[in-house]
Amino acid sequence: MKTPICLLVLVLCLGNLLLVSAQSEPYVPEKDPLVLNKLEHWQDIKFGLLMHWGAYSQWGIVESWSICSEDVPWCRRPAGISYVDYVKKYEDLPKTFNPVGFDPDKWATAAKDAGMKYVVFTTKHHDGFNMFDTKYSDYKITGQDVPFHTDPKANVTKEIFRSFRREGFLIGAYFSKPDWHSKDYWAPEWATPDRNNNYDTAKYPERWQRFKDFTYNQLNEITTEYGPVDILWLDGGWVRYRKEPLDAAVGSGRVPWQQDIDMPRIATMARKNQPGIIIVDRDVHSPFENYRTPEQTVPDRPLPYPWETCMTMATSWSYVPNDVYKPTRQLIDTLVGVVAKGGNFLLNVGPSPNGEFAPDAYDRLRDIGAWMKINGEAIYDTRPIAPYKEGKICYTSLKDGTVYAIYLADIGENEPPAKIWLTGMSPAKDATLHLLGTDLPLVWERIGNGVLISIPDGARKKAVGKYAWIIKFSRISK
Picture 1 (cartoon, one colour):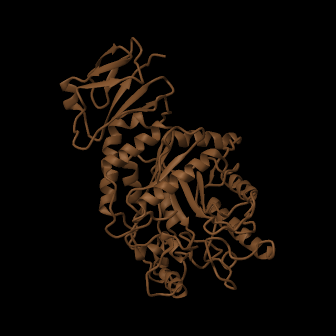
Picture 2: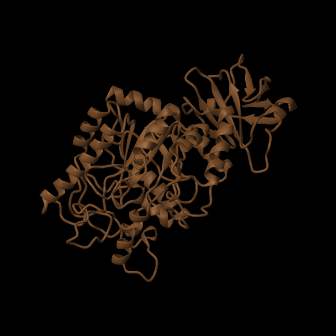
Picture 3: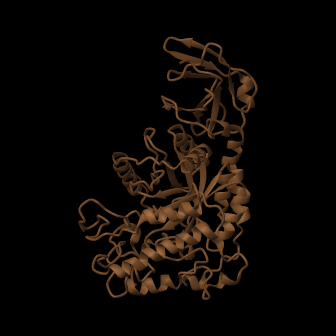
């Protein structure tokens, strides 16, 4: 993942291009009944929290990417310092990392109150700094040169998983397949021209096998030593087996050799350790991509497979001082738009170097939670129903035939309108309609090819919250 600071338009455009490309690739359906059951449950819970956190948070910069020497905006470093000197300073960041404000119980409570039901945490990003107590690297938060290593909560992954699990969350482990700190990925004998490993894996198979074993062993740790893990969220999709021609065009993110880490072996081990675990090998269209993850974008239509929009609450995946957070209205609009098309919404917050959320993040979570307490029944356990959206109205449905029409308010619109006109959905003759948060029935009538719903003043005044209001249809006309 890359931080879209000052690059939002570029990232959104790239995201849409990648989404179009992903949609053209065949999805490989899962066959394991335990995984299918967990996927179904995951699709019911809809709303999750993603957290990017590491030693890089101290500088308030993009996570990992500044040590990658590609000539792209998200890899740029400050002027006046050589690449080698910069990487040395970056790799020394753990020596000052001391997040004494770390309180995962507070995060879990805030996320639960917001209506979130699963969490994905960055156990290791591309820079290779481990946010868990791995036995296979000294470059970790529990390392002897990290000030925080003496804290009782130093194994932050274990503490985060424990806190969120107590609140009933599904637990997801983000893990980067590339590891730029590993000498068996970025070998010190050669330059590191881009994000890929920097030697021919066919020429040095023993070295690549060591890296494969290292990756396997770390994932074995995560899936055996950290309690029940429900989602293995693997990032760094250029590390994969490739059938297509092995070109090395500039900017392609490719090299003329394989970076196969043996996903069948990893998946077999992970599902032996955690039966039914969902595996998300991002952007690798294979049997190990149980759901897809459009980044910073929402598809314009439902997708024929499980999917999740991952998006930043602010402008950056990682912590940036004084970052600008999206308005609550925009976040709720996005949640509704994703769910109406059948997806999940994974919303990212980057904790500070002290181990805290920004006050704006807590404000957004609190506001979303107040709305969800009234309207969550139109979000959870729902599936898409055509026409999905018309104008300012999005639709969701339950398996029992209940349908919800979600009216997205404009800025300054602080109560529902007196009249709502629908052409995409029609109640059954004996259907009852009411506004969530009130118990007053709504009057409706068919007029031509549409339905006019009247919301009495009493219901409008009693409508709780803002941002969006929801009309519940007990039944619809088929």
